[in-house]
Length: 127
Image (tube, rainbow, N blue to C red; front, side):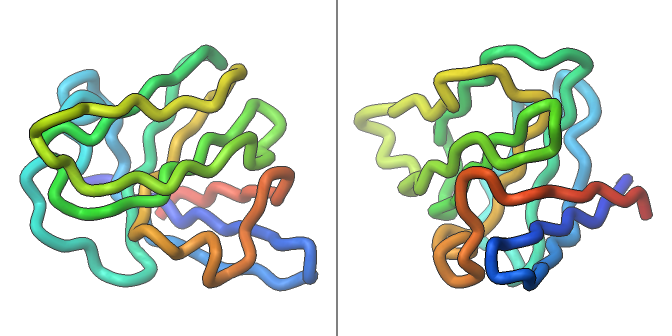
């Protein structure tokens, strides 16, 4: 399993990191965090894409509430969505309403806790 370290640089000149599993293949991107019952604190999943495009995510079979962080080509947070765990009734779609090259998923509330917001700078370091 390939991992990367994602660092978010906040407006308060602080930074916070996540250790992320890389969803590198089409299958891994499609499966994402489906069927997992937990996600350790300070961990997440990183979805890199070849080109900036309109990325749409949903929570089908995802049992963990998540922050879905959309990152543009300039390595800035474009949008943060607070997603509820899948209810199997309605599959809401989450997207950034603009071009994104990367998406990061982590436990819901991570962004609020660490004051990550739209425009925050992002660094990606391969492990």
